[in-house]
Image 1 (cartoon, rainbow, N blue to C red):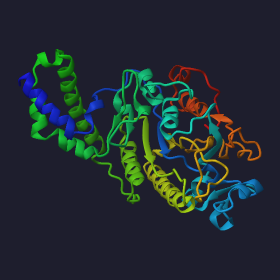
Image 2: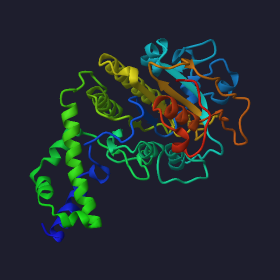
Image 3: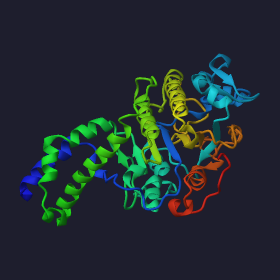
Image 4: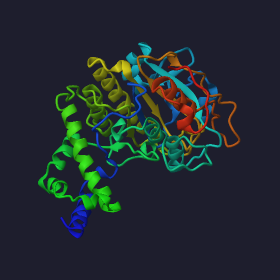
Length: 396
């Protein structure tokens, strides 16, 4: 195939095919294997309101500052004499009662940024607020273990900064069956079969050819792994349900992936927050209950840790639109069978001691959570991956 013809056809390929620009082969295991544990990361995009999720129902300031949106007794269920969870979290009550849930409060970082985009980048790269990195903490994990892209999978059409390393990127995929069928289309097969050695030495053509070759190898590997492990659980018919069903099939099939990433959008509740947040939290909790049950039935839950975060919290004081504006610190949820400190990991925020901008103060740096997971769960050198040392926590 001539160079000009190949470029014409691969231009078409890049337009129609949404996966291959960061794929590599699944043909071998990473050079360094540190742990067989799995980490599932879920982002509640938009900034979930932590104060209306984990409710300080005995705190008068909570009601004074939220006259219209503070939750009443009928809207929550108590987990202690002073703390309650939003009623939408009822599906997680069994998980909580079994000791599989740890709630970390007041999680943030110094000099917080209230922009969705910048705050998300900070959480995804594990940078300081004034530091701009071009790679994510999971991507650097891949670099460290000298892994393959399949070691980190994002169930989406595009790859987030979190999953991009200096030398290795993770994999973004929504439908492994579609990927398999696409790569066995005669069009792609013809491109792969008719390559010439000279193309591989050309910088641009070599990248394109290797991408196609590796993509087909990856598609075959995934398909062979999951074809007998279709989940029989009835997941909700929403975006998070589809994502977690795919992840459960990957995990239960034995696919050699250690980090998964999914997300649920819509938590930017500047107006009419109560109904919107209730609907989204219910979606999250119902899907999570099914996901955990699915893993338990397949005897894979023991080796899975689920981390749920939001890029920031909301302000204590409600706004005039029955909503809340961008805030700072928030709660983080960790679910797993090997939780060492169940329930509330630490105290709720001090509503009488806000920062100069009227926002909640952080107590736990989110990178302490990452450091703990990298060190105690994934069994790697967290300092090398996070570029500095952070204290370890005791939730696992």
